[in-house]
Amino acid sequence: MFRSLATALPVWAAAIVALVVVVVALPREDWIAATGVVAASAVLLSFIVQVAFQRTDGVVKRLLVSTVGIVIIAALASGLMLILSGLQ
Image (cartoon, rainbow, N blue to C red; front, side):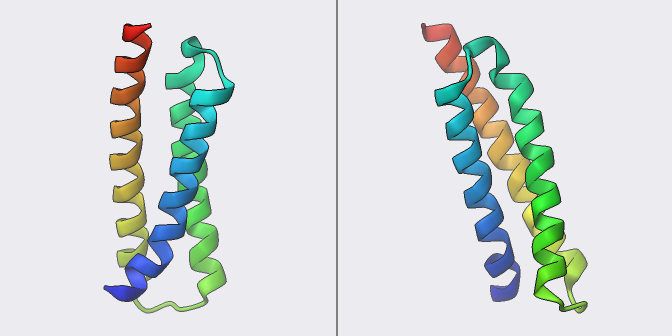
């Protein structure tokens, strides 16, 4: 499990940072559309991390952990963005 988290945590952190940049840099109308782009980019980043890791044993499990985390992070961010855009 340590190897799964070791490759997933940097990807999750990059996704969170990118979503914060989206909220700060883009107008409210573009937040939800940009969330999909950030999630897709994070999935591509997880593939790059797996290739750089150069270990074939458990690669599917590590990609699954990364991808599930990305989906959860994107869903939570989308909900928060909808709440924030409704408040202002």
